Each structure stands twice: as C-alpha cells, then as structure tokens.
Amino acid sequence: MKFILSINYIVWLVVSALFFAGGEFLSKKFALSPKLPYVILIVCIYALGTLAWLPAILQKNSLSIAGTIWSVMSLVATVLIGVLIFGEKLSTLGIIGVITAMVAIVLLSIG
Image (cartoon, rainbow, N blue to C red; front, side, top):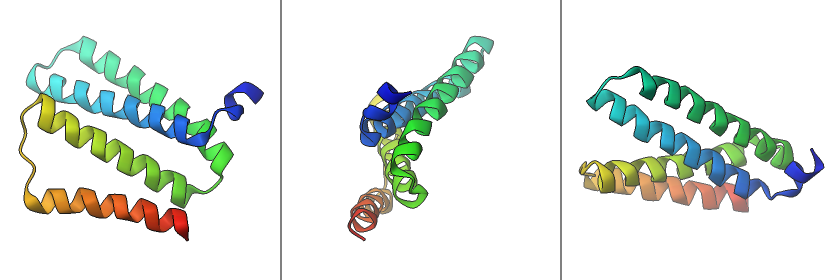
C-alpha cells in the first residue's frame, strides 16, 4: 500500500480518467455495434478506473478538488475521442464549456 500511495495523486487521476475515457470509447463502439464482448470490456475498464481513483482520493482527501480535476480530465479525453476518432462536431458553446471546466480546476486548486 505504501508504494501505491507514494505515487502522486495526479498520476492516479490521469490513469483513472484514461480508463474512463477508454470505457466511453468502448461504449460508443457498443452503441455502433452491440456485442457482448464490448459489455464485458466496458465493465472491466470502468472497474479499473474506479480502482485507480481510490489512491488519489486517499492522498488528496479533498473530493471537491480531486473530483473536479478527474471530471475535467475525463471530459477532455472523452471529447477528444468523440471529435478525433468518431468525427463528432463540437459546437462553440461546447468549446466554451470545456474551457470553463478547465478554469474551474485552476480556481479550485488556488482556493
């Protein structure tokens, strides 16, 4: 457990967010072509994302900051997957929303 907690909480948040983004990617693939293997992979990926979240919240012990950082990282990764891999379009309002979420991280981290 010491080794796990010796890794910076930001690293764990990034790993968790990437797992959840992977789950979002597989969810989209499932929506396009529903197959049982996708469901099994989605559940496993989300479970790994949750397990990676636990050391981060243990270290930071601040749900408002760690949760917001994780949410924005997951949001950005999911948006990038949608736009870059699946060719989805992001509206101007959507871009403003992503930028606003990033500003929220900075404000919560300062305060």
